[in-house]
Amino acid sequence: MRLLPVLHGSRIILRPFDSRDAVDYSVWLKDEYLCRMVGESQLAPSEVVEKQRMWARDDKMVEYIIADKASGRPIGDISVKLENGKPKFGLMIGDQRYRNDGYGTEAAECLMSYVKGVLGMQEVYAEIFPFNRESILFHEKLRFSKVGTSVVDKNRDCVVYYRHL
Image 1 (cartoon, rainbow, N blue to C red):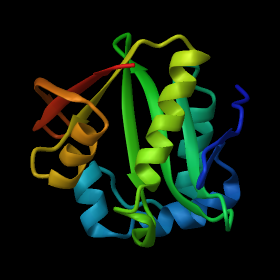
Image 2 (image 1 turned 120 degrees about the horizontal axis):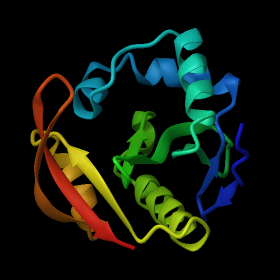
Image 3 (image 1 turned 90 degrees about the vertical axis):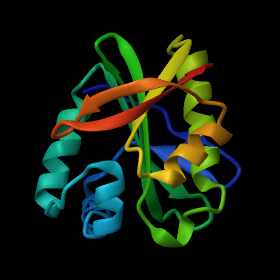
Image 4 (image 1 turned 90 degrees about the horizontal axis):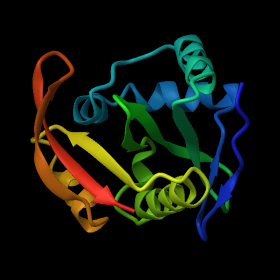
């Protein structure tokens, strides 16, 4: 198992997943709107723990819980995973109370700084469902550029965005 450092922003902490986070994560995935936007499905806490254990063993993945620095409360997750040799970026703010308030932006900048400075990655890409307007605007705000489309998850089209770090 790979040990990831805890990363600090002004309002967030990026920390490795802990089995105690499984209940919050499972609650987030009960939000049908969120599941539709990110292509996830509902998972029981035990399934979340197993999924996170698998990711923790994956040397091609950096996965963090986003926590509110003031309360320590988990509010989402963020990752970069090498897929076909290219780093794929993903972020989910699971707790609705923290959406559209800059927490995702801060978490993204913190993780991208880490993967560039420590892991030496020079670029990341994201695949976004075309109907997920919030995510498209978020990625554009982070200086991602649209580069095309791809077919993923149950043969649904995604818009592909790229950012040089």
